[in-house]
Image 1 (cartoon, helix red, strand yellow):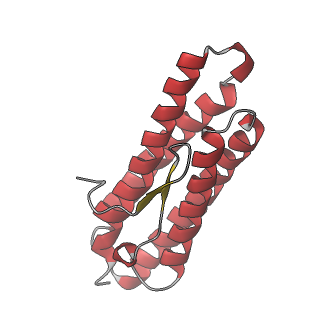
Image 2 (cartoon, one colour):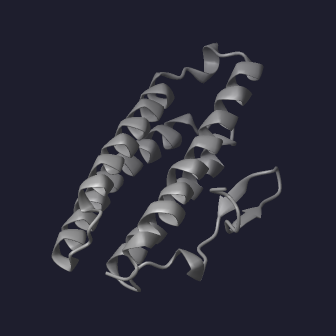
Length: 151
């Protein structure tokens, strides 16, 4: 399961943040640094997603996540090619799917009008975004990127 062994910590208010664990390490270098930065962006999103009145910050952070994820995937794929990683083509395809998913989630956040959304619907959307972000990052790192370790 994608969340098994995940490093999560719960803050007051029920906000669960992703904590870096050495189990996530891929290369001890640039990929790990990128992943840590992705964790940081996502954690900021998770906090602002649960905090009323932080819609503007949430929208900016989702855009930052889109930009950095695209940059990271390009860098990761270049390193895969340079190291002879045999699953490079499949990994590129998966990255495209992840970017498409992230773009759709970002569009939903950008279109959200907190002032005209019922509290129940807002809570449901917040929970859905939280779940998506956990899966989006942890599943990719723990199920796909770990295959790069030997290379």
